[in-house]
Image 1: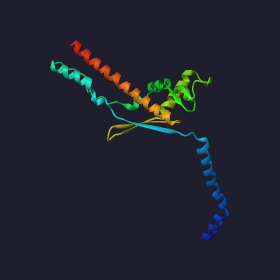
Image 2: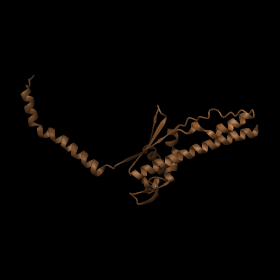
Image 3: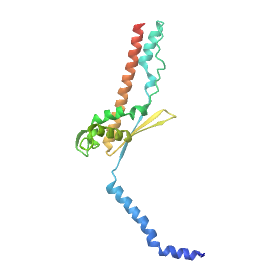
Image 4: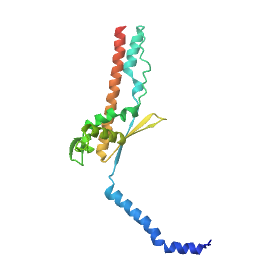
Length: 198
């Protein structure tokens, strides 16, 4: 059993000072090199969206007119609670995005998102296997967060070019809008058919 004094500890540290300082310097330099020369920068584009499903005016107008003639339309709750994350991060939406063309500075021309992500050139995987991998990539670079207090969603795309990120967000919003229009049209048609049958 040996007792060490405070001066012994300082003496040991002073002898090992080079090693103690060397490791943080090496890690710092490695980190700087990785960030500046190896790591690929990623850009995030965000958009705020709110549900428009609560204002399903066409269906409610049809129901209102029908009620004046004593016809009750069983349309249920017109305030459809949209599950945005399930729609936006679905494989169907991802496959739809993969077919769309975008301009990128990296390639200097308009290409499908499937090609931009580097798929379609590797013969070691079948085309369908590559599409499955590409779909997973698309789902991973899309994020969606909801502010429970306000009901506002923040849609984000995280990818290697700022313009591409912004373009993808715009396409996602358009696709979501189309999805809602198709749904509302279907509900309106169902209400109209019900009235005609009565």
